[in-house]
Image 1 (cartoon, rainbow, N blue to C red):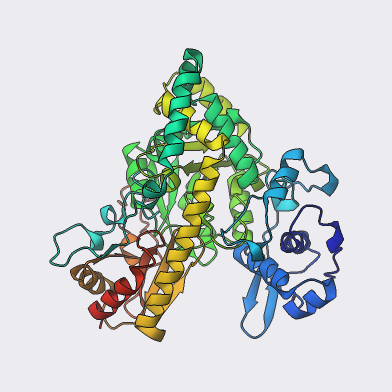
Image 2 (image 1 turned 120 degrees about the horizontal axis):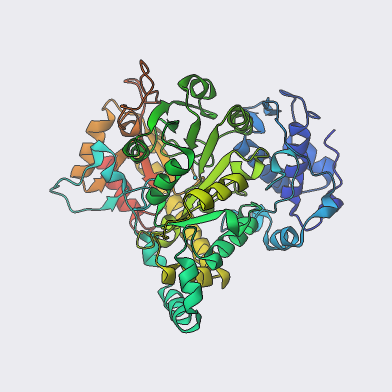
Amino acid sequence: MFFYDMESRGDLALYEYLYRCIRHDIAHGKVEPGQKLPSKRALAKQLGVSLITIEAAYDQLVAEGYIRSRERCGYYACDLAPAAKIEEQRNAQHRTATETSANRRREDHVSNPNGPQPISQNEDLLERRTEYRPSDADFTPPLNSLAPHAQNTPSDAPLLADFTHSTLATTMLPYSAWAKAVRRTLSDESAASLAEAASAAGSPELRSAIADHLRQYRGMNVSPDQVVIGAGSQTLYQLLVQLLGRTRRYAVEDPGYPLLTRMYEQQDAQVAHIGLDDSGIDIDALEASGASVAHIMPSHQFPTGIVTTAARRRELLNWAREGDRYLIEDDYDSEFRMAGRPIPSLFGIDAAERVLYLNSFAKSLGAAFRMAYLVLPPQLAQRFREQLGFYANTVSPLDQLALARFIKQGHYDRHVNRLRTHARKTQDALVNALHEAFGDRIAFAGLNDGLHFIMQLESERDERELATAAKAAGIRIATLSSFAGTASTGGAPTGAEPQASTASETSPARFILRSDSTSIEESPAVANALANAWT
């Protein structure tokens, strides 16, 4: 057991090849639930690789929920739900040319300061078909428009930091490259291509560029015909309800993004609020809710930051296969995972075609670019063309064609890499400054998982009082508890209360911080201002 031929890794980095081998053995029962894995030093010596390689592989397996760490005891395999109709790719030599190209782009975890790299598609079990806000005026409005404790009311202190909003993506956008893409589009594109971009699903060029991007960077093997472009996620929510039906009950996570409930209710759909546990959305509560559609954020849940475990992902896929059910995978900030490789998408491991994938350009390009996209399973893509194909697309044809050019020329990937690097540096600076200011009174969760993380403070004062004090010191900050039960419950199942993971009176105060809402230079001043406000 755990004897792997590291010379057979092909183009894969050592850590990723080892990660895949162990994941395959756990997923297929070769490593039994609860079985202890070799220590990092023992496995490194056994395989003839560095300790850092083992650490990177184990860290990724922990992040995805295949193994768990017990302090001072080691690593143990998790118990995964039985897989339903998940296909296995047995011949590694059948990698496609695209996958090989994507693998060559990937660098080893330990030498990659810019975070996750592209992932290839052809993997075992949960990886056959492929192998996550606090902001965005598009997908996630500023937190201060959602959380009641972070409203933009007047304050005596000048604004020092606003952790409820960010303009970093807009500030760092390479405007010269974008302007050049627009000019070339105006000079090169034909009237026919502009007319095609006005069709219901959007520009074929942009849909093709998005499909290529997802294939290389999310490991999702999709056809451009499955992609639908819309003027922001809110527009796509409306199309989703029209496509799936208003008579369904839609489940949303609680605590979660309040606008989802409002959007679904405005479409006359019933809404069920489902609580979370450490593994993700509560599968038993989801089953009991009577919902047939679940809108979830498995790669990086907002606001809790929970990453849905591999076992829960299997349970969700099995739930979706029973009856006429669907999962809407909201992948709002997966491009900004700062450590390890990206968490595999649910869409990519769904053999039954019950997952719809949703993402937006608002976090990467800024609120001015109101563009988002859906990836539909083939049968729903056909239904979209038949039932909703009469719509005109809601995004400007010029913007669509310019963005397609921007992506294909590599500007988009370089821009995201710069944003990710900047966000990681500012996150590290802020966390270090807060540790210095608060000492052991403070702790963090969800670091490096995306653009927001949780700060936990030991204090006798409640969250509302602390948020008010921070605001008086010129710092806008949202409490975690303010997102639990804030959405309307009018569509909840009869007799059911919204379920939420909220802080009790004896729990530490928890706040949502953004990695892109301040600068390295401002971090010490922000930390000291918070410390003074909360003493």
